[in-house]
Length: 79
Image (tube, rainbow, N blue to C red; front, side, top):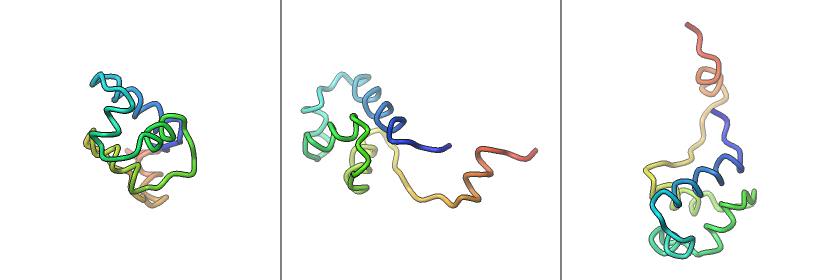
C-alpha cells in the first residue's frame, strides 16, 4: 500500500475523532506539540518522522521503510 500525506492525514484525523480527543488533548497524550498534530492532519510534507511515529504509536502503528520489491508483492500479489 502506497502511503501519501493525504492518507496519513485522514488516518490520524479519523482515529483521533474516534477516541473523541481534540487536537490539543491528543497532542498532549502523544507527547508532541500541537503544531505537529496540526501539520500531520493538514497533510504537510515536511515532517519529522520520529514525531509522526510518536503520533502513530498512539494507534499501534508506525511508518517504516519498505523495499520497492516488498511493495510490489503487496500491491500485485502473485498467486
